[in-house]
Amino acid sequence: MSQIKLLSEEVAARIAAGEVVERPASVVKELVENSLDAGANQIEVAIKDGGKTLMCVQDNGAGIPAAEVELAFRRHATSKLRTAADLEEIASLGFRGEALASIASVSRITCTTRSQDDETGIRLRLEGGKIVHRAPTGRPTGTEMRITDLFYNVPARRKFLRTERTERRHINAFLTRYAIAYPEVAFRVLHEGSETLRTPGNGDPREVLLNVYGLEVGGSLLEIVEELTAQHTIKVRGFVGPTNIHRANRGYITLMINGRWVEDLRITYAIIQAYHTLLPTKRYPIAFVRVEMPPEDLDVNVHPAKTEVRFREADEVFRAVQRAVRATVIAQAPVATPWQPQRRSAQAAPLEQTLRTRLQQLHPARQFTLPSSAKQQGSSPALPTATESSTPATARPTSRATPPAGEERQPAQLPPLRIIGQVARMFIVAEGPDGLYLIDQHAAHERVLYERMRSAWATGDVPAQPLLTAQTITLPADEAARLEAQLPTLSSLGLQVEKVSACTFKVSSTPAPLGNISPQELLADIASSELERSPVREELEKETVLKICKRAAVKGGQVLPPEEMRTLIRDLEQTRNPRTCPHGRPTILQISMKELASQFGRLG
Ligand code: ADP
Ligand code: MG
Image (cartoon, rainbow, N blue to C red; front, side, top):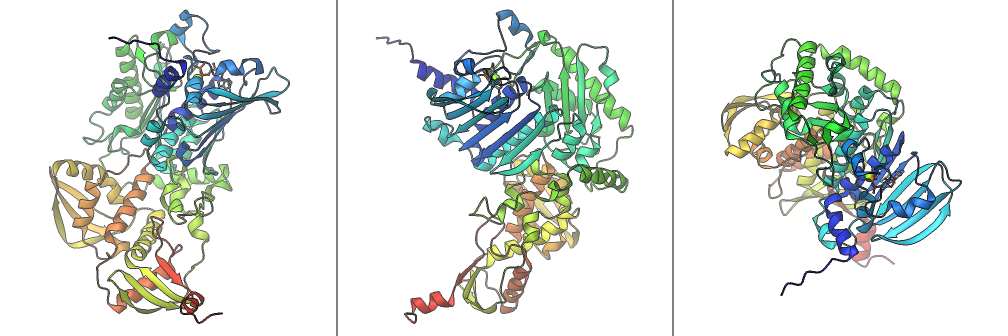
C-alpha cells in the first residue's frame, strides 16, 4: 500500500524554497545579506511592483569567481562555511548555502558578477533553477542579481502575494533597518525608478536615522551609552526613544543581533521592560537595539529564514539589554515627561532647527524631489505623491514640511466652469470652454478636503476646531482599543479625542480645515478599519488623513443646492490636482464640443 518515493530534485527544491522565499521581501533580504557578506559598501536595490516583477540588487562587493558562479546556485553551496564546527561560530549573515538555489528555483534570475580576481565578469541566467544562458561580460567588481517574475512557476504562491503596497512596505521595513544597522554602507533604494531611500554610507548611524524617521523622531532618539557594556562580552548599542515619544504597538522596536535583524519576543520584552513606569500604559518605545556577542554564544541556525536565534545565556542577554536601555533612558531623560498628545514642544524647536539646517546641507537637491510619480504610475497621478510613494523610507524629514514636489509644481488645471445642475444626486453637470463637464461630487469634495488637510498638516499639527458641545462615542471593545491606539495621531490631525471609560470616548474638536463635520461617524470609521501598521508616523497619519477626508466628503445621493455646487467647483479649481480624488480616481469627465458635435452628426 505504502508508496513512498523520493521526490525529484525539482520538487524538493521548490518545497525548500517555500521556507526561504516567503515573499518578495525575503528575496531582497537574502540578496542584501549576500552583498553585505561580500563586503560591499554600496548596495543599490531596484524594485518594481512591490518585487513581483523585478527585484535587482547590485553591489560593489567581492564578486563571485566565474568558475564558481554555477556552484553558487546549487543547494548547500556556500563560501562561508567549511566544516560543521564553523556552524558554531557564524560571523556572516549567510551560511546555509540555499538562498540563491531557492530563489532561482521559483523565479527567473540573471546574475552578473565579477570577482576581484577575474579579468572579466560572467553572466548567468536561470529559469526555474535551470541554467539557460552563460556568457562572459564586462563589469566592475561586484555582483548584480536581477530577479524577474517571482513565483512565475508556483501559481499558488503568486496568488498569495499581497498588494504592491504591502509587499513594498515589507521590503522597505527590512531595508531601512539594514540601512540603520550598516551606516558604513551606502544604500540606495528605488521603487518604480524613483529613489525612496539613500544613505550616505559615511558610518554615521544618526544620519541614517534622520533619513528614515524624520527630524523630530530621528533627532530625538538617544544613543545607548556605550561604556555600560564595555567590559562585557555582550555589547548593547543602538538608539532608543526618549520617554515622551512612544507608539501604540511594538512594531517600532528593532532588534539586531550580530548584524542580523532578529525577531525575539523575550529581548523585545526586555526593551519594553526598560521603560517600565516611564511610558503610559499600553504604549511602546521606539528602539533600535544592536546586540553584539561572541558568535559561539548564539545559534542562528534555527529557521531557514534566519530571523530567529537561540542564545546560550538568554537571561544574560535579557539583562544586558534591559540594563543598557534603562540606563540610557534614565540618564538622558531623568524626568519622565508626562504623556503629551501634543507632540511639538517649544523646547524641541531649536534642536529641530539645527537638525534641519544640517540635513539640508546633506541633501541639497534631493529632498524635494520625491517622486512626482504621475509619469511612472500613469493610471493614478494623484495618489503617489500623497500616499503610495511615501513608504517608511521616503518619510524624510522634509516630506512633511513641504508639499511633495509633484503637487507643488502642478498649475491649476481646471478651466472656469458654469454649473448647469446635478444628475442622479451624484454628478454635477457644468459647461466649460471646451464642452461639457461631469464632476463626481464625492470624489471632488474628497480632493478638496484632502488638500486642505494636507497643507495644514505639512506645516505641523492640523489646527483643531473645538466642538460647541463635546460628543461621546461608544465602541465595541476591539474597536475601542484600535481607536485608543490612534489617539495621538488623531490629535495631531485636529481630532481631540479622550478616553473616558473602557469603550467610551469624548470628542472635543474636529480638524479645522474640514469645517463642520460630524465626528461620530468619522471615529467609528477609523476605529473599525485596520490601518496597516507602519513603523513611521507620517505614514499612519497620511492614511488617517485619507480616511478622514473620505468620510467627511459629501456622499453620492446627497442633493446639493446650486450654491454648494458652485463652492465645491471653485474649491476644486484651487486644488493642485483637481482631476483626481486622493485615491487616484477621476473627479471630472469632459466631453468636448468636438465630440458632442460629432456624436450629433454635425461634423464632417
Ligand atoms: P549563503 O549566503 O548561505 O552562503 P547563498 O545561496 O545566499 O548562500 O549564496 C551562495 C554563495 O554565493 C555565497 O556563499 C557566496 O559565495 C556567493 N554569493 C552570493 N551572492 C553574492 C554576492 N552578492 N557577492 C559575492 N558572492 C556572492
Ligand atoms: Mg546568502
